[in-house]
Length: 99
Image (cartoon, rainbow, N blue to C red; front, top):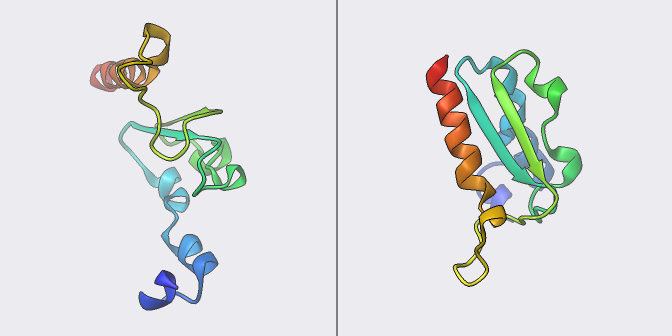
C-alpha cells in the first residue's frame, strides 16, 4: 500500500529499486554493513553476500539474533560479551583510519 503511494508497483518493485545491495560494489571508501539474520524486514536471502561486494572495501557482519536494529542490550542485561556492537564499530573505525 505504501509502495503504491510513492509510485512503486508493489512491495517487490519497491525493494528491487530501493535496495542498496546493488550499489555495494561501487563503494570506494571503507563501509561496515551490520545486520541480523532474524531481521523481520529483510529476509536472510536478501542480505548482500561477497558476490554483491566484489572487491569494494565493504565488510559484511551478520549475527543470528538481533532483529531489526536490536543489537544493544538493556542495562539490566548488559554484560561485556553482549556489547559486541561498540567494540566492532571501534575496530572498524580504527581500521578505516589506518587506510
